Image 1: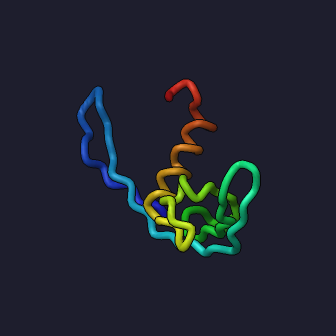
Image 2: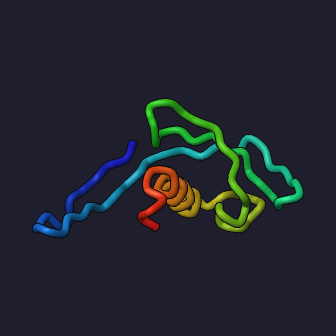
Length: 88
């Protein structure tokens, strides 16, 4: 699961470091008119595992294997866009 560690707790600025322990399984790779994609199963970030598709470029750019750090950053970017689009 995701772990938060406070690294700044002084008003008006608050911060935390985010750590995650999760597993990525590549279910398949495929290509369509929008590019090359991975279909990934993610386990450990949420209570239930989930499946999603991600462009190879957003997952490190290597069709042989996704980069876990890039996958995590992309997921967090999408989360931010969905939860707080005006924050971008």
